Length: 135
Ligand code: THU
Image (cartoon, rainbow, N blue to C red; front, side):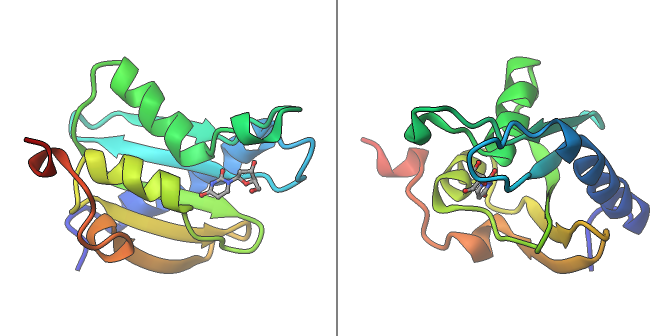
């Protein structure tokens, strides 16, 4: 059972899907949208932003989280990730999500708005390196 209301998961998926139109994905043509719900109740969206220097690309999930953190948000309930085919968050994004809470819910959905998987950061990145690993 989700800790957040069903309506919230739908809203997060809808917002992530809508914002995909802003994806800057001219090299891969793979548009990704994300929407993260902060503990304050505010939702922040993000898209992937690619670069001619390919490794500089930033994923949608990290853009959403960094936008939120830069607005003062520090704790999160859930994040949605929407792609054409229901792709799963990459390893770098999992590590960034882990920084802000292993119990964050992750909704993975496709462009039709189908929720393909509801999981958590803990499940996506078990035994993540974190603040407690640093002396
Ligand atoms: N991408 C994301 O935005 N999030 C992920 O978790 C996986 C990959 C983006 C990066 C790049 O712009 C495109 O998808 C193809 O890798």
